[in-house]
Length: 142
Image (cartoon, rainbow, N blue to C red):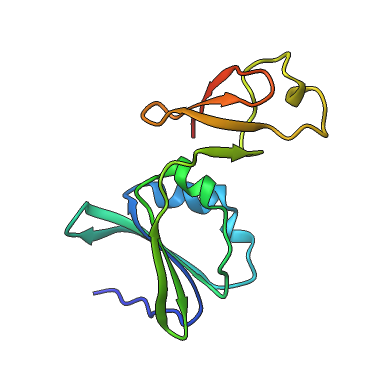
């Protein structure tokens, strides 16, 4: 059996749907960190059957909106002193800033670099968001 040790400080992303761990790892650019990062894939799970887990040593601040867009079932465990000090489910973000572009080519966010794309959730099931500037709806795709 493979063993991965616990971390004393940092974040553990748990209950990631099997196959989404690599997507989260990539979207958060975790390979560029100077801290140890562990990606476990296809780990047995009572709830999910199989799941992915990401352990990030010495980091406590990550983009929860991006994680929610990729896999809203993910649980974030903040670790301090070797113990879980907080635990919460990510969920689909109600507001997203700067993570994807508006589908309207005439939108100000696509032509002016100072305008950060801001979207508000319209439909959680289809991951459809409305642009704050032009109200065009955009579906987030991985």
